[in-house]
Length: 90
Image (cartoon, rainbow, N blue to C red; front, top):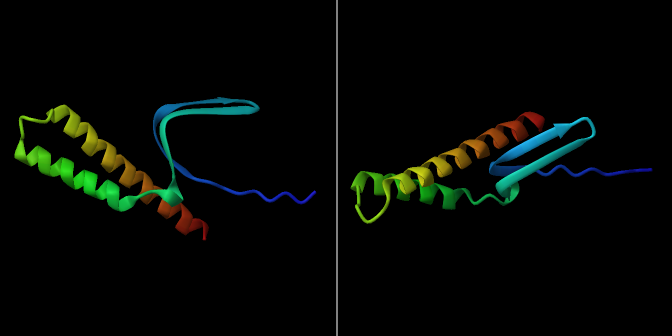
């Protein structure tokens, strides 16, 4: 039996993981395949959130902007960790 295994890496946001002896369950709020990750869109979202915080616009909720900024930063950090892991494997 010649099985080929394919590895897929996902960048996930929020959720839980349950590890049992013969089963792993992962429940997440969001998941994007690392290879399909739109880095430029996340960088734009980060820049927009930073600009909105600087402008202190009353029309937008500051907490919402901070959440968007944190989300973008976390995604970029996850992408960087994935890139380092892939680099070390290859």
